[in-house]
Image 1 (cartoon, one colour):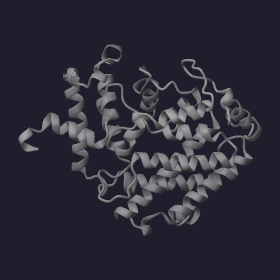
Image 2: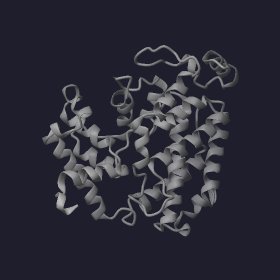
Image 3: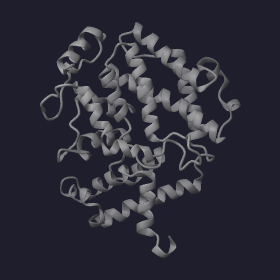
Length: 336
């Protein structure tokens, strides 16, 4: 039998000096009795995986809206790919793999239905704006419930990694920085894979200088980027990539934004108009009729206000749930 204390001791013996040790965690917002068998970061990972917000990722858009075919990524499969890449990097650098996995599993919990388009429209409609990383922190701190209490009560290290996996902030742990890189490595490459499969782009469209440096296929590009990150971070006091690989990775990302993420082939104007109409209509309906919110959301209104609760409710919806609720509210029964 292996107890938590033994696992904590193994971290001190086996991990790099710069690795975050679970026994030295900055702690939780509310103190708890420690688990007999799991470290604090293992516990956080398990709480995230068992959450409702994590399960909903299965039915949230990554890039392609309701794609025809069984092989396109969803927000959940993206999360799993990020976790796999991040764990490989963390293990190679002798960082804390449990902390890395927990951050990776939770990094996109704040995403809206309909991918980044849903995020953009909710940001436009909600008076205080909307960012999925900030919402992700709200999900784990407030919106998920555990033992009848609000929030998962995660460690400071995992909360920081979720908040700063994107945006201007920088994670304070090396494990959080690994996830930040892994997210970009994953989505650039798997979105290329999906875009090629869908016919939105062709192999010949990819920037030739990027392909020459990073690799000609999905597997080689990920392998080259991960290898570069590991080799350069091992020699440095930080988690870093070589200037060359970083330059071409970001150039490939720019190509994806121009030719895929903002492409009319992926999301036609009329489809985007429909998404915006749905988001705006649902927001206006619940703002004007807060009594129509589900009971679990209505109970939060006295503390957070109607607009904040409406934003939370819509942000948590899956694609198909948002569509079904829209139909239920706005489409006459005889037309369905």
